[in-house]
Amino acid sequence: MTPVSRRLQPPRIINIDDLRRAAKRRLPRAVFDYIDGGADAEITLRENGRAFEAVTFRPRSAVATPVVDLRTTVLGTELALPLLLAPVGSSRLFYPRGEEQAAREAGVAGLIYILSTLSGCRLEDVAAASRGPVWYQLYLLGGRDAATATIARARAARIGALVVTIDTPVAGLRERDLRNGVRELASGGLWAKLPFLSQVLARPRWLAAFLRDGGLMRFPNVVVPGQGPMPYADVGAALEQSAVSWADLGWIRDAWQGPIVIKGVHTADDARRAVEGGADAVVVSNHGGRQLDGVAPTLRVLPEVIAAVGDRVEVLLDGGIRRGGDIAKAVSLGARAVLAGRAYAYGLGAAGGDGVARAIEILRTDLVRTLKLLGCASVSSLDRSYVDVPAPWAAKERAFARE
Image (cartoon, rainbow, N blue to C red; front, side):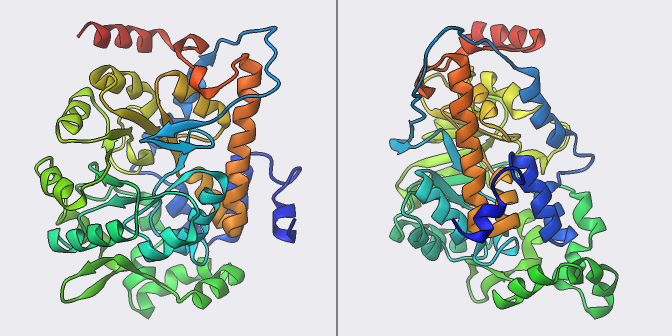
């Protein structure tokens, strides 16, 4: 065990919130708040977590479960537990070669890593870093020609699935980023940067590592024809010019010719449209509360989506996953698996790959303990009988079941 990994063990690091505090100590405020924050008043960000608190377990007592089986499959790929590492943009800001580090640890753990379009590492390098499957999350940044070229690169790199994100026609209003001067730090002149430089200078170890890794990154997987990789500062404007529509799924599917996952589904109608558009799986997601604030938490929306699609496609969920018990609740309510973003991003920000490994270990250990306490021998045996939901949720479930 390395000195870094020893520092990540109990009593210092027991849960994901401990990793969050460790990341906060290491990262400049602007970088930490980029991971930690949400849109507007951050109502949905908070409600994503509170929804899991509202669901309670129904354990089977006096059941011996000395060994539990956490394995599941997602789109035919066996996972060691029902967890995928969600796409988190700009991970290279958190730690040098951040995306490669996270992908490597996902592969070691037997999980899928999903690479964000807005990554600082080339998709080919990330795919090569992992011994397991890597998926690619697609924005249409740079236009159709740029996206088509990236899809071809993903195919050549043997990326396992394309994750098309549909909930980002514009970037959400992330007030923490504005207060921290993210735009000024990324693209402003010296005088614009000055009011915000103290937060960066206060983290000299992070700053030294950031500079050794090349400083402010470009996006090597968004190569704009005639211009090259998109600069970091161009994201907001580029998103507004490249919103994905249902009509785009046709040419994306033809260019990709592989499994497609639609991420950002939040209603039964959109779930059905995703199926009609050829999706192999959907992700119930509100972007971790980072886009439209005030929408329902994803766990509450999950039964509506499952009722809409039935067994035609696999349904995944993200938003608010902090404990193994959260994974168990989502699977009990019908999710095939969950995506976690902040949980491992805190680990990455705290200690690089060792931190990601520790985040996965925490969630795995939590899930084993939860299943044993539930008297449930395997993830595949989890179902609605293991949880109670608030009465309004149950009434809504019955209404969708009648449709």
